[in-house]
Image 1 (spheres, rainbow, N blue to C red):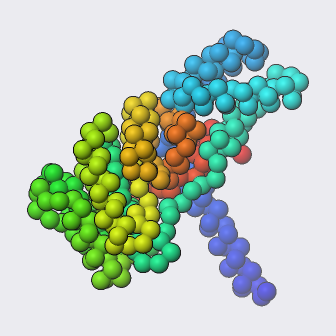
Image 2: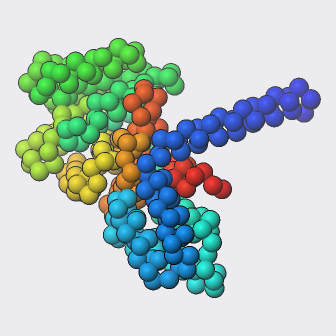
Image 3: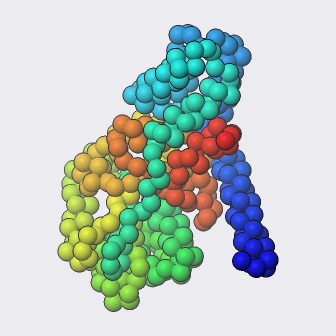
Length: 326
């Protein structure tokens, strides 16, 4: 390898490392509320109770529960921490406790699970959820993400109940440079999905993203409508939909878990798009979703900007919550 090539590789490696550090610093800033509710309170607890005894673990349990980690998941984390204490044969220091919890969380969340792609033809993604969770915004940001990668995207406005929802999607489409397939208000949502698939095949598009109507997870008739959309796109494109993403508000707590359970049963949700993660002190919901429901968090919304939608990486999340320690 010549000196110029070697210098170029070193420079690119250095730039990549700087970009990664910059992202982690930004990510930590976005999760400041969750970090304060978990790490800040654990640090305060250790100052008051430096001995890791039963009372310490009881208070630690309360901290994790208040961060929406959930009972089952909290029990699992405390069990792992207790086992580490036994192996150490002594009380752990503050940094050791935080590091141990970070490792337990990373193990619990598992490896990153990227969005599933179609083997051939367009990848179809349905975004579902109740009103107010940020479905349409998630669709728009995801469209922007794909477009910046050079992909052709078709948006399907299958929320035909509200004219405002169709108009909002049109705005996102214009911003991202994507075609929006729409019908009039009150039209059959499945018909819109059908036309979106047809348009994608005709144009050789890479992605079809369907923005569905917000609905209460307790409304059986509306959930049936989602099933119909799934059947229609499945007939038009093999394997579709390749992802059914549930947009879930990170601030919704245990109610969000109930939503996830019902949607999973009705439309076989394949992943979670967790929105408003930057606005909550209860980011522990990430753990509860994965551990108790078994649905991976695939996307996270960490701000209002068009770039503030990212693929979820468990290790990055744990590092950001626990102050980016290594």
